[in-house]
Amino acid sequence: MACLGLLVGGVLLARPQEVADRVAPAFPTSRLWLARALGVRLLVQHGAVLAVPDRGVVRASSAVDLLHAATMVPFVASPQYGRAARITGGLAAAYAAVALSVTPSTGG
Image (cartoon, rainbow, N blue to C red; front, side, top):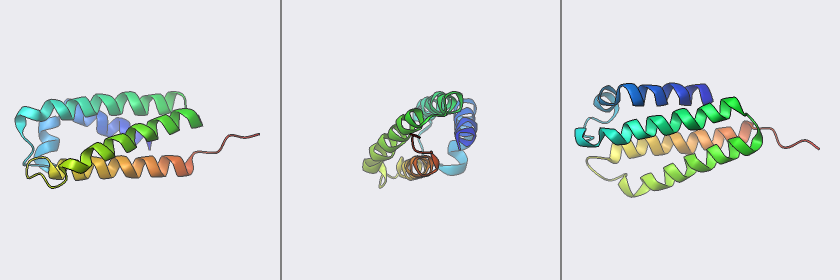
């Protein structure tokens, strides 16, 4: 899953307008910096998970995703930001749930 996060982060960083045009056409062009910032966050976050794939890093990564999902809730009904909020918030929540469910517990 971290590889997918790296891919999405790279695409958001490199081609935010193309992503917005395809998945959230009402997203304001003046706010594409938000897509780039999300791309950077995803690259750093998922790069860290790949570099150090232990339970603590995965849990921290999942916490960041859950925070992202929670901060998208106020925007889900927005005509401009709603679609992007639903997509990114939903994906973040799903990633957090899956990552936590497949991460092995600490052995002992």
